[in-house]
Image (tube, rainbow, N blue to C red; front, top):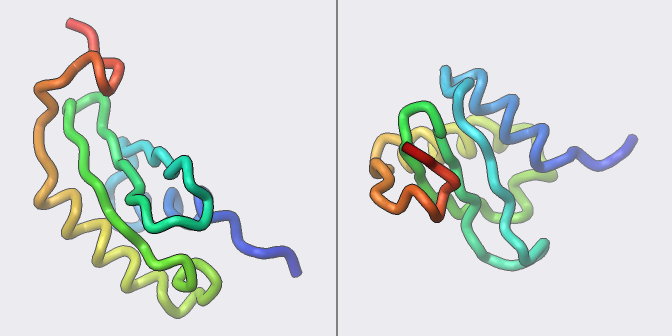
Length: 89
């Protein structure tokens, strides 16, 4: 069995929690503690969430990842830095 793809896992969890319009930007450091950036280009919002690497290897952690994502989005912010996220007026 192949290892689970982090991006696929995150998109599946986002969709399951009703966040279908959100995009995941993975950190540049594949095994670092850098946070994932979550962007909603329609609502011009972004959030950051740090997910422990080991959680991706255990499907039983998907609910905990979903809770982290939900908290991050609920506490996220509207972007005022349009150029940084690629937003254009």
